[in-house]
Image (cartoon, rainbow, N blue to C red; front, side, top):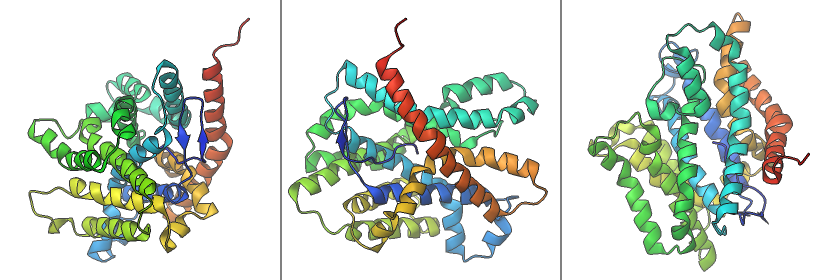
Length: 360
């Protein structure tokens, strides 16, 4: 959610950052898809309208929660591209964690602050324990909570877990071969089902979605191998089958055999789409790389983590609900938050924490 491709540079921690604008633009549509998912479903404001759509399109909209799994694959992809050249030592690990915390926490804490009036008014038993879980980002480990202050925040529990494990992937990244990459990709396809078979509860989200993150790492290594060999196909030859296959899968999930689950099949399709968009080429990649969509993509984390708090306030302050007005407000607020708060606070925290406290 929070990770975005950056311009090419070598950071003090050894992190190589590469400009992948189409992937940044994609993040906007993933965040929008999550919002549309939350506006449909029983009792939701767009449910009646969505029911009038063709069955496949309705299922595609209702499958918007799968955008989160795509975000996890994208997170693994971007982190791998960003830190591919890092020599992991104490200093680089510290800088790495400063960067991760600076990327996630400022906007997340803002989302909690926005919800304070509603949290104060909430009389759910054990409320203070749930507040502590929110601050500690433990929601994804403990199953659904009886409070809905900001339900999408469970995914940040997963991201923090993935961040903790990511440096362990350095050996694969630095010694990537097609054999190793394909083995990791194949393992990621079956990993979640193996966890279920071993008794891992589906509500333990960081473990269940680890396979998505691993697929992102494998996809980034595959992209690097293709780029290094100079034999990369045109990007559209990869992302069109990836995006099209994912759309068909989510539009008609019932067509899958019972021994397959949607997320396991979606995982390699996500990888194919990300590799293709990273390579670029074709109308879709050019469209996603436009200046407006890249900026909206950069503000997509704010869209994702603030859209439920904004919805709470919109429903409180407005007598009628308009989905276009609400989505417009979320986009405008997120763009402002990104430009005026998220990016400045990110830079300030990185600089402040790396320098340490000023001496008296």
